[in-house]
Amino acid sequence: MQRETLPDVPSDWRNRQTPTVLVVDDTPDNLALMSELLGERYRVKVANSGERALKAAQSDPVPDLVLLDIMMPGMDGYEVCRQLKASAATQGIPVIFLTARADTEDERKGFELGAVDYITKPVSPPIVQARVHTHLALKATADFLRDKSAYLEREVALRTLEVQAIQDVTIMAMASLAETRDDETGNHIRRTQLYVKALAERLRTHPRFEAVLNSHMIELLYKSAPLHDIGKIGVSDAILLKAGKLTDSEFETIKQHTVLGRKAIEGAERRLGMRVRFLNVAKDMACSHHERWDGAGYPMGLAGDAIPVPARLMAVADVYDAVISHRVYKTAGTHEQACGSIVKGRGTQFDPDVVDAFIDIADDFRSIALNYPD
Image (cartoon, rainbow, N blue to C red; front, side, top):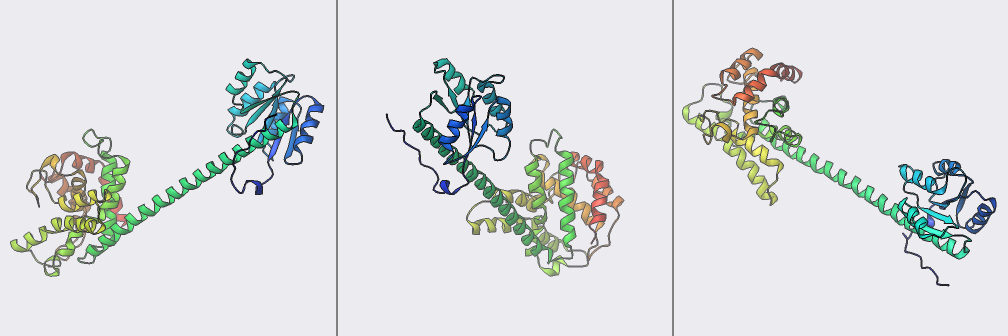
């Protein structure tokens, strides 16, 4: 008789908990025989009917393998196998049919139901022991790989969270540099983040914006908003903190903070040695949030849809917060004054649809401002 070879298994398999084999047969002698053959190496559970087999398969210890007779009164082995494979709790348990029926059609039906092997009666003890060992080893390997896959998925998720955290820290660290240069506070950064997110959420189903404002983009908008004024790092205190009206020359200088902001982010990318996708939104916001819908803005005089969507949203958010906030050169205005400034700029300074979205959620802007005061 040809000896069956056994597959390789994980090195620690033998050190794991003793495998459990469930033997299902309506004949007591057969149950006794299989228990004797397998009892020295495995924990053996027995069931003398299909109904009891299904209960045993879902009770501790859950079997690692089922040896299943086909011809039983009541529920036959085929039905037991079908129900085992239909249940998420037991579908991974390998099933070996034990049967006196050696017809090819019977074997085909068994394999279609999910059985992994067929052993004909009367059984050969060495064959039974070898087949049981083989399929337990295969299951141990499959379990090992599945556990490894789950571990790797957890590691990927953890690394993704770490990357996201690094992005957040990078943005906030850069934004903090700009924040120290003028009298704007950390809550200005927080407010503009929330304003922009609220506008984006309102516009995400708008025909003009739905292709851009998906969940991922809205998250990037929220993360990138703190960098919209990063370019103020390059503006001198004498101009940035001046209490009086700026001269024409000084105003031209301060307008350069938009270009300086984009260059600062591009410089960080160059030092990193690669372009970073999540910073594209930040560059658009930093460079273009003072562009106007009618083309009269700066630094490039962009108009209409040529202005990046992130910058159009930030333009409204920034003006609202500028009006309601105290600065060295002005006192804080009211919510109504801020709303009036934005409505007045509809179609000239601002994208009309963005202004309409603002009008719809103006009360949300007021709530954000109240929750995060300077």
